[in-house]
Amino acid sequence: MITTTGLTKVYRSRGRDITALDGVDLHVREGEVFGVIGRSGAGKSSLIRCVNLLERPTSGSVVVDGTDLTALAGRGNRAGKELRRARSRIGMVFQHFNLLSSRTVRDNVELPLEILGVSGAERSRRALELLDLVGLADKARAYPAQLSGGQKQRVGIARALAGDPKVLLSDEATSALDPETTRSVLQLLRDLNRELGLTVLLITHEMDVVKTVCDSAALMRRGRIVESGTVGELLATPGSELARELFPVTGDASGPDRTVLDVTFHGDAATQPVISQLSRTYNIDISILGAAMDTVGGRQIGRMRIELPGGYETNVVPVGFLREQGLQVDVVDDDAPASVPVRSNAARGAALVKETVK
Ligand SMILES: Nc1ncnc2c1ncn2[C@@H]1O[C@H](COP(=O)(O)OP(=O)(O)OP(=O)(O)O)[C@@H](O)[C@H]1O
Ligand SMILES: [Mg+2]
Image (cartoon, rainbow, N blue to C red):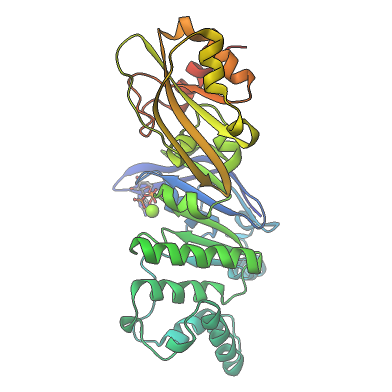
């Protein structure tokens, strides 16, 4: 539904070039909720602003619902009209709501319809319908200042839906809200995604947001996407930073000369007594340093951090045994705690490849 290819954005600021996007290939499937996560300055807002051409990309292409927006931008009048039409099918929700304080809630929702030239009666009918959809039918005559943060964001969402979009973009829509309000706004986005078949691309720096609503996710760093996939794929990818952050387990080695492993269980593997089998088969003592069960992306998953005596070389065979049982085994670096990945993904991937035992 959304595909960016080789997208770059270079800002020129005080004579200096700042590369905010450095060749982003993003693919968001129709009907999914896709989360982009990354630290401050990673380029998340630049990406979302380039997707609806609020910001003109420096190079690369953006295709939304089959229309190449980048090809339409900057061409003649007819293309401009087409671009405006395509953009009206992309709703946008902002962190700070961006409501007009002098207009009532209903008039705020009507604004995009005014711009689209919809007649007064129809505008008003549609705005009330949308306010009902976001649970604010009784606030139509209120002004933004009379609303809570969560209510303002619901108005923001209703306004974003006015053009009957197929795609909703959300830039940190919940980061100005408290945890409970965040949950209810995320639930609303999820419901809209399911009920209207809306494709949602959301930007966040909170892993919890990804965990709660996203089907797929990507991790951005320095203008690039360094990992991406469905939540299920990510969790099944050895060494995935996103998976580790989505589902952290902690626990430090009890001393030197130990091998610490993160063992991830999905589906059937979760019911097999593999740890006791491992202990009996190889006659080794195993300590459990940490463990957690959780639902991530709607899937039940378990993770355990265990410790085996001896360095990695002495444990190659037991690690192989665990993998043969269908478990995902990540060897934990002594100086890399599970929840704070310190190595770059490439370095980590290389290290894991070296460690893989067949
Ligand atoms: N209009 C602009 N002019 C110049 N530089 C900009 C502009 N907008 C963003 N940048 C720079 O581009 C880089 C990426 O910024 P961006 O706002 O996309 O990051 P972000 O991931 O959204 O961060 P945050 O989590 O803080 O919102 C940063 O170095 C930022 O300073
Ligand atoms: Mg931002």
